[in-house]
Amino acid sequence: MLIALTEKLYVAPQISVDTVTEAAGLGVSLIINNRPEGESADQTPGDTIEAAAKAEGLAYSAIPVTHAGFAPWQIDALDEALNGLGDGKALLYCRSGTRSTLLWALSRARAGDDVETVGQTARSAGYDIASIRQIMDALAAEAGK
Image (tube, rainbow, N blue to C red; front, side, top):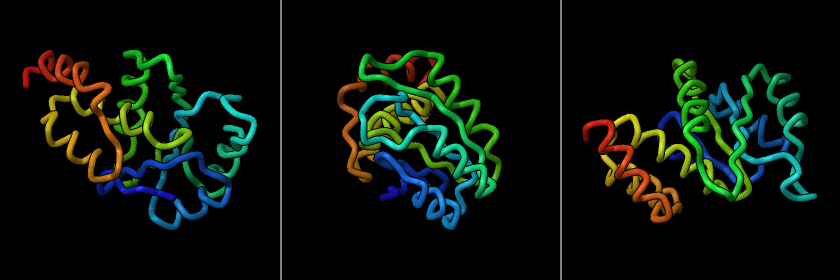
């Protein structure tokens, strides 16, 4: 199930090889895996998703996010990956889509986007950012917003 977060960004729970084909059909040109390898026995391995992405002509990046939280390097890596997106679309996935959405929200706050608007976007997609709201506020303050 791909959930449109923005016009250029989808989030999803754990994807399969079939999901990669579906994403390509929607104009996705980059898949970002936010799930650590081996997190659960039933997850499709990242290298399998990467091979499927490459077979569809899509770029692939792994930016694992554990339940321990977020680090600046993860936000940096997401920003770098999305900056290279151009006119394409991206799909971020993890176990439920929550960590992917939270990482995106932190990135947008650090970029100076309005935190309320980012929160509403996440809520509209079915994701709650309350657990990172204080961090978002701090990042937005550093950005001068």
